[in-house]
Length: 213
Image (cartoon, rainbow, N blue to C red; front, side, top):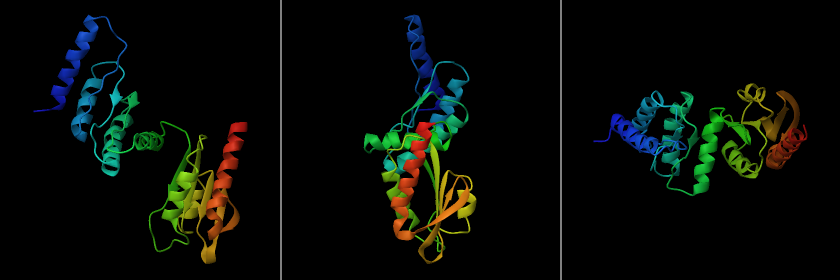
């Protein structure tokens, strides 16, 4: 039956074929649909060869379940310093694969591109609809290539702390009046109905500043 050891043995057989043909411009992939089998196989192979490795959890599944499996498997390997290229394999639009892969790399600080949004889950303390707001902002800010951080927190309990660590922050406040933080400091207030347009404008202006530097 399939095992990490069998996958590594198969990889060496194919590497040997290429070596005998004096072909050395290749990378090796040991993809499996089972997370731990994939991880153990890559770890074994990485300790024995110096060739570049292409990571992936193959046939991972649907957008949600496949993204979770890929994040766990590739995340474990990338944290070990293993892997040179990646592919997130999903039963979904190929664009979703690219987006998921970028988010994995951004979460591990291996790629710095675009807006990294820090946001809170559902909670009774939220002063505005955080989940819907983040969903809209992700779409409206997907064109930003410059690396910057944005925190969207619905209350004043956790908001200031997160905002102090991001380029732009939004903290929910009472009576529809929410606080905007710039460079970690409280700067001005914004009404709940103006959040989307205002935050998009702030991010685009910040991105323009970064491009001009």
